[in-house]
Every structure is written in structure tokens, then in C-alpha cells.
Image (tube, rainbow, N blue to C red):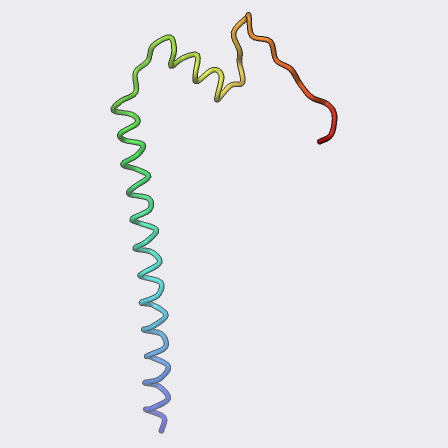
Length: 76
């Protein structure tokens, strides 16, 4: 009887471990895809005036001197 209980518990541990392995494999695949995307982005990165402006605009919130920004302070 004790052997049966031990076997059932071990089987549960094995099943839980298998589930964790599947989750980890999915996470690894997800991160590999993200790494590939970033690598492709780095390979195709071209530092020119337009790229610098885009980074300044998107990452730093900067604008050209002749850009007018309208801000709505009214609630929606």
C-alpha cells in the first residue's frame, strides 16, 4: 500500500515537472524569436539623420524647431 502511495506521488511530481518543462520550452522559443527580431533590427540599423530624428522623437520626446504641439487639457 505504501509503495502505491509513493508511486502515485512520484507520478504527480513527474507530471508537474513535465508541465514546467513545456512552459520553459515555450518561454525559450519566445525569447529566441525576440532575440532574432532584435538581431535583425541591429543588422538593418542605419544611422542617418532620419533615424536620429526618429529616435529623438520616439524615445526622448524631442521635436523639430518648427513642430507645433497641441495639448488637450480637457477630460474626455
